Length: 458
Image (cartoon, rainbow, N blue to C red; front, side, top):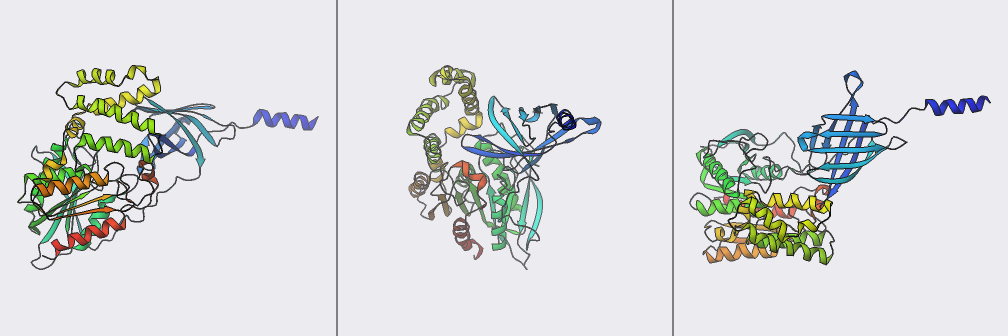
């Protein structure tokens, strides 16, 4: 009888699992896997508080506005991200299983209790002390908007003026280091080039990090204007040789570099395109869609379906109709009303993004038209595993355009096994990006620094 009573007592008074602690899991969407960590602790008065880390994006401490715990159910609200997470804790208190909802999408998410958050290994990230000078700077563009950045300068020498490089980042709001998935590729490049003898300027995009302005309304032409202001800033510096200033752009940043070099041929000494475009963007994006899906293992019918959708949508976007008119036409052309709700939600987001001024302007650009007007030496590097800007067609486009314009000072290099982010990779699928420890492939760094050496020795 005593054993029975003791057993019943243990059942009655067993403590229910609590959500406090550290939880980690991964969201999977569009072939990408993004790890997140949730920190839940006690707040004054017995309530709960929480923050979220986006591990692969190296963003920490995102605030959770509300933590609602009604055992075994947990609800987290993040209004700044327009996101919620609703989950149930298991009996052992080790797993939270639920749905992450954001911007019309709902994705399954399982979090497991951990002792500490997974730390990213990024061995190429330079650490101080540095054998050169770093200066915080502010560049004011033609509109008067202040752009914040960093200028690195080699050690001073008597009467020495340094060659300089302006780094131009790719699509999306980028900080001065082009930070992504814990990588800082522009910091790696700036470090390598400054050690080589270059002054290097890198900026936060307008409306990003410490820069003023509005990123969302900007087009590629606006980014060219920002780059032009940065070029003027470098030309005004007494320690920099204005005859040896060049541009190094990644992805869309390479397009910006070509646009600027074409418009200011007397002021740009060299141009480096890293994973940059060389063909019309409507063609590039169709190639991109096929390559990304193929690298992700998608079946042939899915690849064909996406191409058909793009071929139906792009001509509409290249017209002059308003976004309101276009939205209706695109929905009809793609038969969105026939999609199930989950697919329709994703399609609506994609259509909305395609109607942005930036995308519509970009879609109409043919990078070759600018390269035809570039007069300075050009180095173009694309990776053989680049699924976003396919190496073969884009490098051919750049080389052919320069030749048409009478510029024979071009070095074209396909980096073996390198993806769009300039990392050594297996397939080039974007899903690999967060899990690769390498920031910039040694083959890319070596080719870049050897080519640039000619501008140091002059």
